[in-house]
Length: 264
Image (tube, helix red, strand yellow):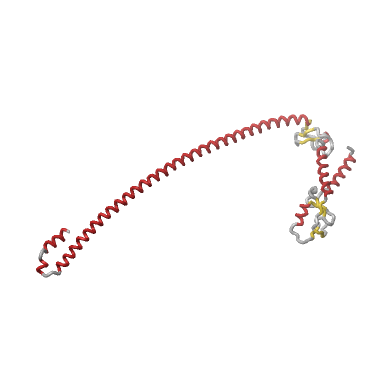
């Protein structure tokens, strides 16, 4: 391509880029809108810029003119931005493998800077004392390095995968053992609960027997005491009557009465 044509083409592309660029985010328009003063912005950029300012009017971020908050979608500008992005992508594809500075094919590889250069770069002061080799030779060398590194990485990945599988299997084994121990403990506690319940029932039966025995002995003892009280009551009544008799009657059978008191 002629340098003049290239310059003209580059200037035209720069102009298109400027036309398709939002003055707020300085990137290509995304969902562009037009406001009353005629300036264009990304819808999200303008909304964020106007956020917090109340009222029906707001200032244009570019010319500071007072405008109504009326956002008009600009489909033509959106289409232009999409075309500029596409052109830049195509240009990047075309210039791939070409030196940006000299527009010459990148046929050499600088070992010192680890970068592709052209024949003009090789004669420049920057790369004059550097070790430079053809691209094919450098590619073969680095291909071998990459192949070796890939093998190491694959071995490392295989080792990690194996370790992961072992970890998962060990975890499953431990979980299985833990579950078995839990089931065993549940069975042991179940037996222990059954044993305690049986012991409780046995103790309750024994305690009931003890209660019955205590009640029986209590009743027997109370019955004897009642008999003794009754006997003593009769003897007291008889002595009270004897005590109030005349001397002659009082002394009659007095020994028998006193003897009965002693035996009682």
